[in-house]
Amino acid sequence: MAGLIHIYCGDGKGKTTAAIGLAIRAAGAGRKVLFAQFLKDGSSSELKILRNLENIEVLTCETRYGFYKNMNEETRERARADYSALFERVVKGVAGEPGLLVLDEIIPACRYGFVSEERVISFLAQKPEGLEVVLTGRDPSAALLETADYVTEMHKVRHPFDRGVAARSGIEY
Image 1 (cartoon, helix red, strand yellow):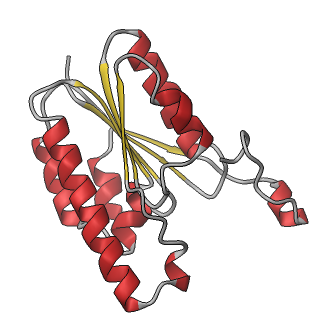
Image 2 (image 1 turned 90 degrees about the vertical axis):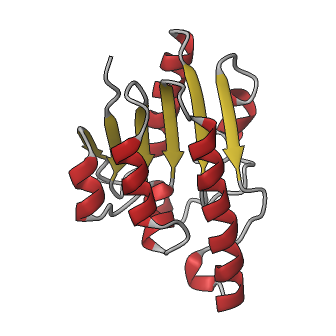
Image 3 (image 1 turned 135 degrees about the vertical axis):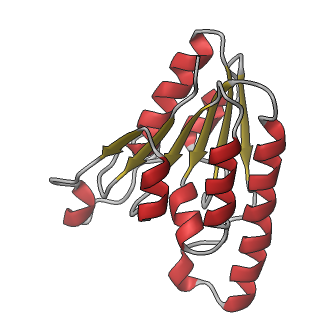
């Protein structure tokens, strides 16, 4: 079975949630799942349960760098080194093993220059044949969109954050 490439993008809630749903489905079918999360510190509620599921491995960067706009150049350089190293761990982790790879928030990691988009596209072009890959995040480039077999856009119609409701544990993170 040929593995396909999915992009879950848009300004709406649900990109990571959809990727987690697919990861659980794949693991339930006996497929090996590697779930790698970028731009987050690995403390999101969903990772607690994913780490305990058979057939799922979770890789994260344990350092929290905060929002890109609040980083100074030194912090951006450290983040670039850490997230690029995380991506290389992912590449080694899926070598020769078909299954499912989720690259959560890889799209903004590429946009901010923390992970080379060219490296990601090269990996996608040379990935193991049976490996299914999901990329999540807002505003994918035309080059990333071109690699995808599926593109699903989550569009925000309304969100409580717009009324001042803060993100809630177990719902938004």
